[in-house]
Image (cartoon, rainbow, N blue to C red; front, side, top):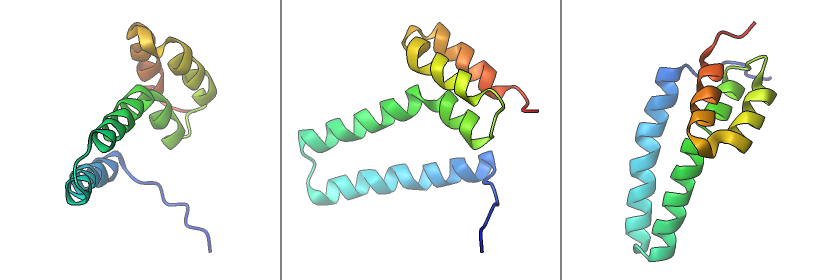
Length: 93
């Protein structure tokens, strides 16, 4: 039996709000080393950088491939990132 239920934005934010502190606590429990902290920062930066692509894929946007390409190649300019985010925020067909 396949579950096709999508998470709402509010539910996704709740999961992120629980997951990030849990990850931080896990790192502290292991023993905070510079490598672990660097890995956590890298994961957070990557997630923030690809936020428009993640959002477009989550919403099954009709231009998700274009958004991903713009985000990947122009996201570092910040203007490209804002354009990709604005495109991801438009309504899907």
